[in-house]
Length: 148
Image 1 (cartoon, rainbow, N blue to C red):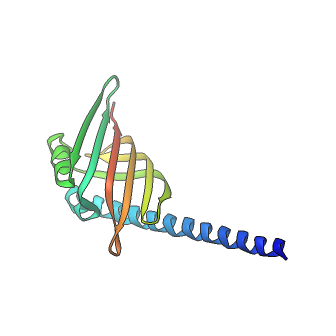
Image 2: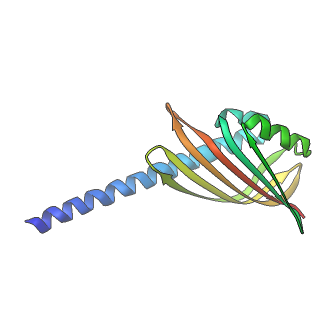
Image 3: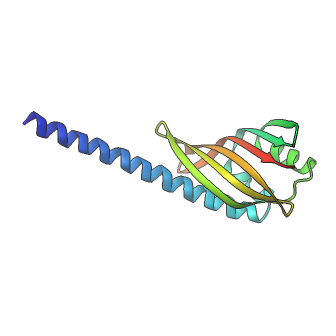
């Protein structure tokens, strides 16, 4: 009898973990899809996806050097991108993975290629989303851009 009860509990835990995976995976894919579609229309149109106090790190890799810029708030990141001459930023090809962090946050990793000012570059990006009210907002953002 105890063995049957343990098996039922084990199955319930497995179903719960599977549901959480499907749930956070679906949420992250939906979030990146909407974020990407908004980004296609302009860098300034993704401001609403970011928490007002988002911590942002921008790494720009050149052949021999790395430039690092850190900002608080998306407006400051947007200004830095503008100062660097980055006017357009579109995902071209990427692979996405995600992981649940606690009960209200999701880590998303993207790697692949982006078009920056109509030139394709390799990139890596990490988002940490936190659920606030009924929506997910980016609370931490890392962007790695590889230019040659």
